[in-house]
Length: 141
Length: 379
Image (cartoon, rainbow over all chains, first blue to last red; front, side, top):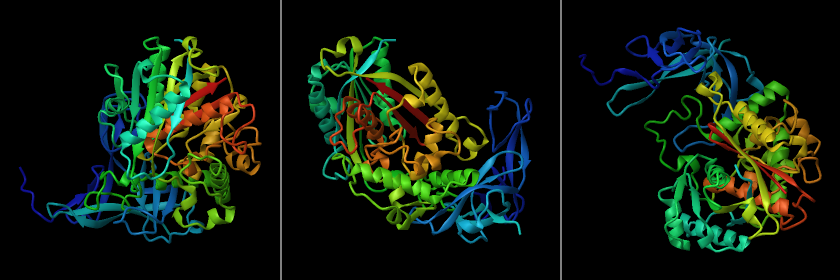
């Protein structure tokens, strides 16, 4: 067993895999159905497309396209507004929700289909003192 | 399966009633419905009780308030479709022949925080604002923006829906809000989530509604005007990539509508009045298309042409809808059946919102992004 030391970087969701100790680089992990080839974000036991139960882990792209978005002006008390809440379509098919960064919250500047790149960001410490690493998407310019 | 009729409906005013318990609200609606049906609680053979936040032994506690012992009470939780699920369970129980008379009640005491109020999220564990949004105002806004990008729908189209629903609620004494707004007022109101401003979002609130169902053969013992439940359908989502990573509601809504139309032997063109799940202004426009009231991408034109106004070919949300009448989650789906029953009996309190000669009505509820129910009523 490896000793878990306080202050290490941990991903905010299980389908995010950190590539270095500080979490400056990360990829999305997914599952590919061995029978029909359908790809899912994260781990799945059963393929929804063909009901096959043999799925293998796969790595998904860190680029995607803006599928849709909203600009949020009112949220939970701890959330800083306004911010752009987006849905990002990955080239392999799955979609993920994300907050856009490096981007002005103005509907005139946001276009469906615009290319986006995933970046990581330390967002908080968890109860064990680890750095929680989240992903964001920024426009590719 | 036997034919099933609505023989009694009852409803509290929707609003904020911090001094009432959820059981007080449910009792008030039950008494109202029994009076409407001209019956005694002793004639009720089963109760289906829905509340999203306080479902614990709800049906049993309500019976404790109104009397009647030893009958089965089933408690239902199904997000915003909690009430319509209770109605559907009562419908199935009567249609199957197990009971002649069943009562469905939905009640809710939400407080002001909605889904945030139940402590499901906190600053320490939440991904809200970090990984986009998981809250209803945000997701329904994203759905609206998707429609704008796909079909060129404008923010004004959504705003006009809010103007419409607030306008009719002025004539509904049970509505939480009863104030009409101009298009400018809706457009310029405080933005919640682009493109929905404050008046384009339903409120949280408290309230209760009750529907009493009876086999059609026995219904005439209680009422000269039974309203037939022509069909009840329920679906779960498509579980496509969109649905798994975000939401996808068009497929399940269209499927539920298709099944309901087919089973009832009617088409959308036969509908006289619709109560649909307008939790946000963007949702109502999308559901025009999902319920086949118009073609894909035609939702904006539908509101522009006034087709869903009282003098249009398919009036929608004459009660004020969730946007203005309110959305105490567990009560909502039951309250829709109450409104449709009043419409089909010609009993909507004022002519400003009574669709003249309405014979066929449809009620549609979406629960979270995971369940859709459709009920068709007719006389």
